Image 1 (cartoon, one colour):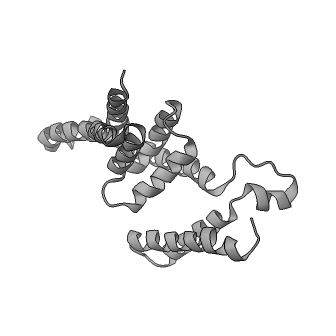
Image 2 (cartoon, one colour):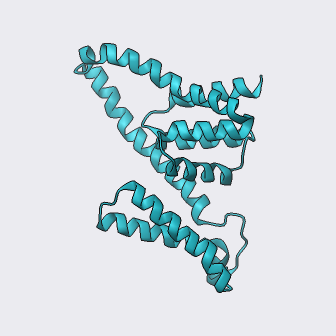
Image 3 (cartoon, one colour):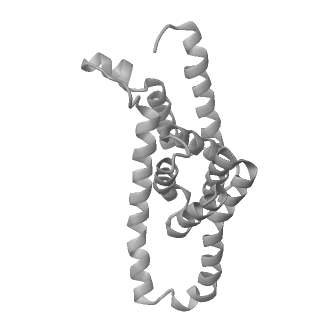
Length: 199
């Protein structure tokens, strides 16, 4: 199968079987992309960060980025079409018949079962992305000091804590959070190492 067809059908499957929006897609996207050798887990995490930082729906952005990385602009188009087509078809069908069946006990029961599953998928994505972004998984350390210097990515943890506290104390617009995070990243990962000899 050509890479273009593989991209289309892979993202079609992701779009068809993932409920709960873009974040719920992260575990499936990660599994599919890494299993096919299209990019390593760290690359997927980078693409997730870029997708979150650019305008447009998350699922479309990540599909476009992965497709373009694997097969150029045509690959990006194939992956994007694959991920949006199931939603487009399903929403047309749902819009046609949902109003007549929304109060059906079986439909309500199915939706009640989907909600906690979506939360579980998002939690799995948080864990998967979090351990890659906050830890040096390939590090070998001995003792408590090694944990903080070698294993824990303290700069990323600091940014996470600062953004978490700020967003809990004050409801900031997501654009502001992204810009603040980028500025902190430039400071801690770019400027600070030039002046302080710390890891």
